Length: 473
Image (cartoon, rainbow, N blue to C red; front, side, top):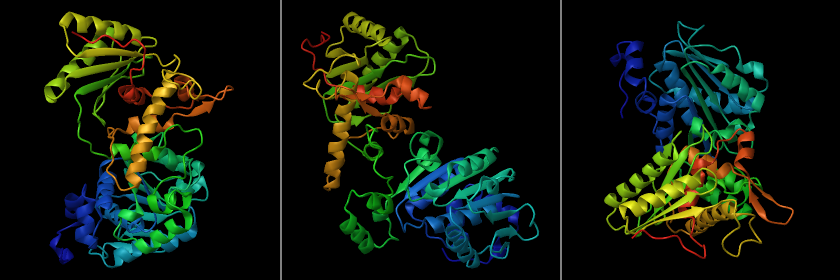
């Protein structure tokens, strides 16, 4: 878009009105900024949501992206405060702050804002309308900021310590206070890591692979891969935008779940699989996970439903899917049969008999029972075995994808599901068997009960009992 004289805008109020919730258009019109697709998506998230977190490889344009947002927020909010921080003075002042100066100098709003080495302010409003640069060296640097419209930008967020991040989070109490974190994912702990893992449901998250960016040197990327190896932590962090390899006790790696959540797979099968995890406690969810072939559909989640109601929702989900997909001939309902799930299993069998539902079968899965195949030497119980089945499916899909093949399994792009799948740990028992972390222990770590993950796992569970369940006739 060609630049027009700034005089076409009658006032600053007009600028705010036009670009309030459209930083992409502002960057294009006022800065002549040619945003990549990921930059557009992330800019819109910053405009619409309170917290955004971006992990990326190197050279993808995140510093320019941050600079554009600094200028947009200063021009499109009344009396705003923008606080920029980074772990080192060099990263903050020589890289990010200098990048803001570069884009401001060539912009159509350069006559509105004054840039200095530590502050950018709206001319005539120096005390209340400004951006400032504060090195992330001590928590008190991040405190004392209060304004209706406030944006914190944390660059190289993996390197910012938790006490400083906690001070920032404590400052952002207003409805229009926003946080943007960006950086190479160098650490498997801390607020930035948690924003892409256990706390990801609270953030709008993005991963940017250097191989997908038009701004990166493909020759340099190949050099890193050749030197360090495709699965080295150097390449994972600097190229793929992935955190270093998962902790030894994480059962399913984040990258496996995210890859499946980004896939699109056709539902090719004559069998509908319904995984049903029945809530045990008041705050837990009852979850139904429908699967056809290698495609898991959006989850059905309910709170505080009794046995009869839960069974009714399962039957309704099955009937609705049969209408939507006429190729279906069979319905397999896999229920976590331990505890309160036993009542749901009994009621489903009654309904199938009463209504004469042909091709329907209920398969109770007792997670605490022994593994059903020749897995007793590997896994402590059936629950660990079923999780291992899904992990193996995801790993196989990942391996084929790394060889250039399409992704063959699709999971819902559900933040809570991905978090639950990738935060459950395992341990080695004294008998040398692998055992999944108990739900009670997950809650002690401050995590949700993995109800959504368990339902999806159940949808993939196979019926390996000697005596199969009865099919409806």
